[in-house]
Image 1 (spheres, rainbow, N blue to C red):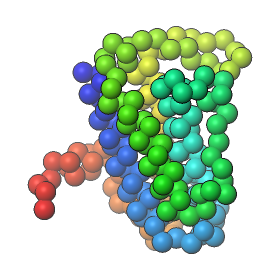
Image 2: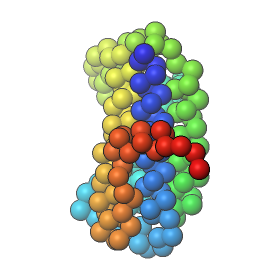
Image 3: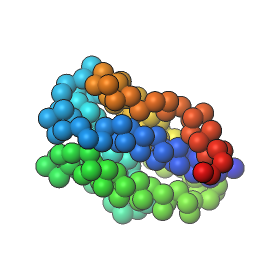
Length: 173
């Protein structure tokens, strides 16, 4: 059951992020840099932060990097100057998460992982809680970007999981 919930959250995560990217499509690079009232300063910086945070966590979760190296990962800002470049980066990082999420069992998700800052003390936490944290982190920053986009007349519309559920249940056209 836990693996089903994690898969649901990450399917929703991808759907909601795509809605944000679609709403931002066509914005000029300089528009993406306009300071907003939330997030990490601008649409671009908030999206980059959200994406690189998921990349960092999943590089640890999937074993491709130790936590000390994953923690400090950053995306090269010069490589993501517009929405198409941000989307390409997002799709790569989302695919990394999807590969892991699709194969995890309930037992693997229940395994305890050390939670703490590099070099500091840690507390054991089940992997599923860490993964829900990452998905929830994305929700926070998508909301901040949605507010900034709305100020620019580019609202992404409803991002609640309820809208995702209805979209998934709608008959194919």
